[in-house]
Length: 103
Image (tube, rainbow, N blue to C red):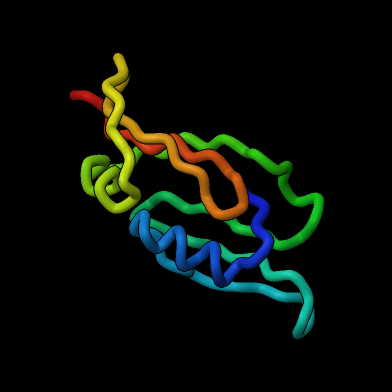
């Protein structure tokens, strides 16, 4: 679960990583949103609720196509012993290490 200030903006940012919104919940109109985004079998929860997740969270994602992700975000792929990866920060400061494992 990742804390976000604006769920709609976060969904647009995560779409650049290939994620799509699955559903959104609000207890009532105007209250904070709780959203699930998915890319294949990978699911993330994005929450506007204060206290749901600490700021500056670090998530490791194993996804195919790290080179395309690096190009989309204008970052360099790092070669690690466990795979090729990039580090990104979403608009809310959450850190994501996105990598494709070496075979």
